[in-house]
Length: 243
Image (cartoon, helix red, strand yellow):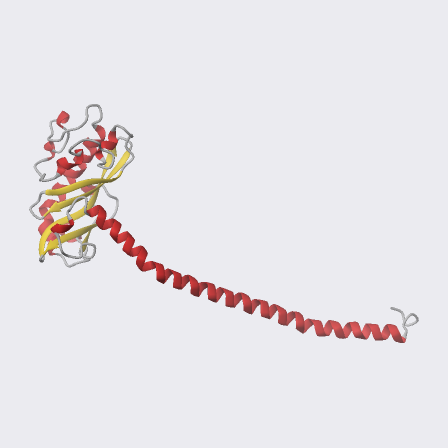
């Protein structure tokens, strides 16, 4: 504004505007600081709530997982056969080609009154009709199988899925043929069509053939070292057992 156009009133207005601007600056800064503080407090409260929720749910989730695992193990080894904390009494196998699993395998050791009862572990048949077939086995201390269960597969419904007792309508279930079996040479661990000891449905031999051979390989690998596996400290790796 030119000096000619300025009046006392305009000077007063300009001065008031300058004062308002100067006063507004700290007010805006304070508002931003308050907002940042509120956001920080919210983040801290949210983090604390998440931590409390995790702690509150961690134990029930773990208990649920353990219960499901014990239920699954109960399908191959009766709960009455052992009295130890099966999920805590474990050793770790290295990756063994005979088990068909690419990585370490946990072995649960069942005992009764401190004496060895059975080893429970997983194996896998890589050559199922529609992909890999995952197995859970319980090998008794005397070298015989207590049971075998298929725990994961992608076999053709109506044909290969009878290896899964949940879908098998036969009596007795096909999978019960494994109970009491011991390692007796690879030639016997296949379907009768191939000269082995196991029955299968006509026209659907690929799935059972893969399952039987995988179980046979697993038994042949673990049975000879079962005493050594029982003797290891709980939680120990079992690499040296297979050297």
